[in-house]
Each structure stands twice: as structure tokens, then as C-alpha cells.
Amino acid sequence: MSNLKLVGLVGSFSRPSKSYALAEAVARSAEERYGFQTTLYDLIDVGPSLGNALRTDDLDATAKRVLEEITAADVLVVGTPTYKGSYTGLFKHLVDLIDPLALQGKPVILTATGGGDRHALMVEHQLRPLFGFFAAHTLPSAIYASDRDFLDYRLVAQPLIGRVEQAVSELGAFFSPVSNRVVAAE
Image 1: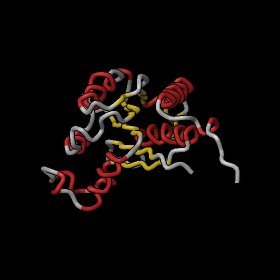
Image 2 (image 1 turned 135 degrees about the horizontal axis):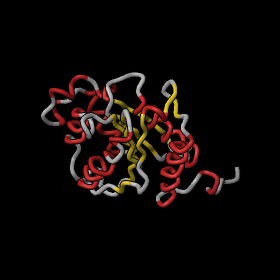
Image 3 (image 1 turned 60 degrees about the vertical axis):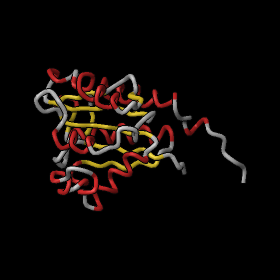
């Protein structure tokens, strides 16, 4: 089992959630390919203290733990539903509580969902600059999915599944696939 940690952060308060389903599909693919230990969080997991927090000291223990896991991860999968052409407000508030140097050099796969194609550039115009501020390595292939790409909160559109696999393959610049690792003889 790998010691490498992938953490997913989804800016959604809905369960089930298409944004969570997309981030989960990316995380599952990365786990299979690279052997990551994966954990996914949405805003429900962060808890109610987030809305009242002006700084990390104001967060309860659960929210602090989630924030610590995000910053300690080897790779992040970030996802959010699109509202009014951008990410959710509490998602941004959580990200605002991250130390500006905490994500430096960290590989990040960007994902977002929306009702239709009108929001497709949100990942490029909103998420990529946000994580660029942190000097994180946002991978070249971001993934945007619309309602038609899902059936019962599962990815069904083959082009979307292909984009997930493309983005996950780009982690190969940072990590070796499990099949390429040397296994020690017992």
C-alpha cells in the first residue's frame, strides 16, 4: 500500500452531488493507477464552523483536520458546482483559510460541474487562477461536466470518462504508475 495521499475537496453542500461524483471518479482512477490512499471531503464534511470562521483558529476540530489533510496531501482533486459562473462561496472561504505557501508545487486536478456548456470555461477562468495564486501545479487537463454527462450521479458520457483518464494520466509527470513500481521480494 502506498503512503502517497490524494485528497479530494468538493465545494458542494448537496448529497448526492454530481460534483462529488466527478471528483470521486477522478480520485478512484488515480488510486487505481498510482496506488494513492484517497479521502474525499465536501463542505458538509467540513462542518458548520466554516461559515463563522475568520481564521483557522475559529474552526472546530473537524474543520481543522480537513484543512490539515488538504495541505498535507501529495495531490489534490478539487471540484465544485458552478454558481453564477464561478465556484461556491464557502468553497472559496475554505480555500481562503489555507496558508498561501501550503500548496506550493502540489499537483492539482481541477474539476467542475454545471447545468450546461455555458459554464465550461469556469475551470480556466476561476479555478486555475485561484490555485495559481498558491503556486500549485494545476494539471493541463481540467474536467468540466454538465448534467447530460451523468445518470443517477454516475459518469456515463464516454468523452467525459476520457477526459478523466487524460487528467489522471498527467499525474505521471509526478508519480509512477503502480504497474511500473518495483515490488520487493519477500
